[in-house]
Length: 289
Image (cartoon, helix red, strand yellow):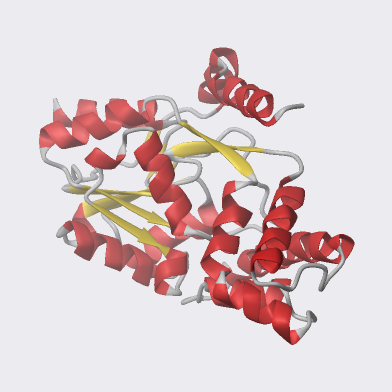
């Protein structure tokens, strides 16, 4: 399948009205009594602002990039393609497993772009190859994130952001990320950046959710006390738990269709559960009426 056809097929999946309607039916809205109306809204990125639809063959495309970088730096052929591709996949798998384990920590750190390429990708590569990936760490991290998924806005996200803008509610993005720049570019592509006051990404601060410091940074960036912010995420272990640790005004769970299954249970209870941004908008509109 050609790249453009693959992307079009992924968008069709993410925007399928029957699929999204079925998802909404399976997740009824639940709101804890006594919550105050938010003065600030902090959003996770993947699963909340956008839905990720996985692409096939991403490791081949990242391998192409690395081989091009080797050629640019005059060390073409220093590693065979099979080794590069295997290590690209192994790095991503290892870091995902690490991230799952880190939800057990109180203040987990994030893997930086340089750590990603040196400690997980190029661990056993020759010195010259390691120096090239060190030099282009942010480029490789960007590709490793960008090539894996097509990102499509979730139903109602533009309307939710417009509502917040009209009501004077600042919105910040607080998200774990291999490359926060990928998220910035997606927001710009879908013309959503104009609604966002601040963006806090884990790779840029070397901490990751459920470390509450990431949410505290987000609240500071939109200039709203954290107790008067709502935090919205798609997973209990990284998002709801992080909101509880940060003591936000409300910790909101918004599961995404086809979301990742975590390897263990975290007993954190959301204050609000909604299926999608449309449902969260309805909650806020009812509270505001």
